[in-house]
Image (cartoon, rainbow, N blue to C red; front, top):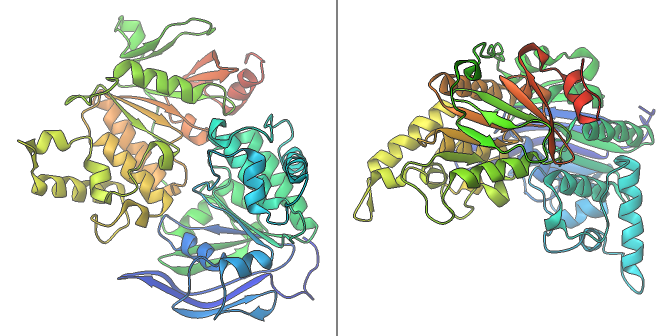
Length: 489
């Protein structure tokens, strides 16, 4: 980190308080970011991280407290426009690109100075250069329609847009779960760029539930819990277990993989995919956790969709569905944004409690209360809109929807995006318990810790399954070797 001690803080928040009804989202928070610093911001879902980010970004007004931007107090007039003019950029956990526009047209929205004759050429050069710098070999065309890109590609575009500059300065970039849809190689590229950016005097706030990334990228780590800062120390003084402890949760011991092999007994698979051009045929048996791994965008999501279609009706929901789907891109494929938290959770089982078009409301409320407690959804009222929840808590509601159904097969597309480590461990244990009862899970994840929970893993490359790993053969080295065309020994 450069010595920037003589320069004013890029942003300084003092005594920040913000409440939403009875919930104290921020309860006296002090927070400062200096030039040349990467600040790691951690805490469980609902700890106050997103609220603090929105205060800094100008989207939320404080009830009490002050905000200083580059040494100038702007508490009474801090806004999105002022934050933008002061060089603050934000990549939110819920991506904000317009799916019907091209990449370069989205860049134009972010950079108002891209006007006049030839702006398309300038925008294309700007975003292409930034993508090349941060994510070499990205394979994204500036003329591509965003809706046609994978979620990983959209995340790369949004990150590159935030760091790019036309004439406006870039002083601070807030990255909220920036690697949630990126595989390990892309995440490493981003972290290396963050180091370069801060070494040149830029500032970054890095929010992630992948604590190893925080410790690798950050100079200083700030821990939040229940709307307060409960830890603020140099990253070198933390370990991953120390961070978990500071956050207020102890991660559970990893569950053992199943040692039995259903195939050996001649049992038929619950779900299968014809081999076609795959080097390895896909099969999942009763009571298994089956992982899909490999570099992102290599056919894992398409496989999950194909499997879901093969198990589901094209137009009418069955009373006893064979499969449930937990989407990673919750805004597009998961939540019903105008519905309540409760209705988002209960929609798959409402038919069980309905007679002559009337729903047994008491049973629905009981279902919601049970799953709120079991999976730890942070809300004082399940009748609140689903969008009142943080991203991680929205994802918990989707888990409740799938696990609360009677589906024998649960398909999960990178479902832990934005979920804190304590909840992850609870979900791992819950999945294992459900698998022990005979339920089958097929799970795509970009995180090695999640893949390692699975009994068997299929590795994808170029849209094909190229390797099958089981038991102790499931390792990061073996997955990477298969992903890049090398066969593991």
